[in-house]
Amino acid sequence: MRDPEIMSQVKDILAKISKIEPGHAVELRIPPYSAIQCVEGPKHTRGTPPNVVEMSAEVLFEISSGAITWGDAISDGRISASGERSDLSALFLQLTKSK
Image (cartoon, rainbow, N blue to C red):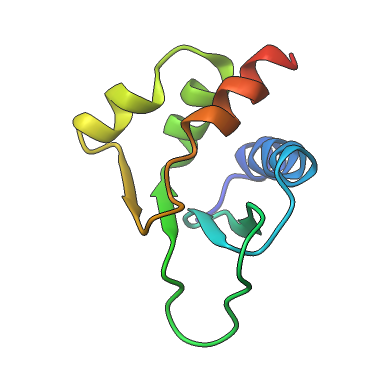
């Protein structure tokens, strides 16, 4: 079941990410709440995208607030990232600076 308040917070953060890094090269998934395509580069249209990042809403909140770092969340498995464009550390650094 999706909590409406969490859904709203996830969508707000993803909207900011879309403005900072528009594009279609990476699919950023926050199950079960939402997913977006972001980062400039080749557009993917069919099947599983080659660049996928997935994390929980809790991790999204922590990383976007600066409570945890991208590197820590990757190293302990809280973020799953695959593909050559899936390192979103700079994007989240920009997001935390824009607050």
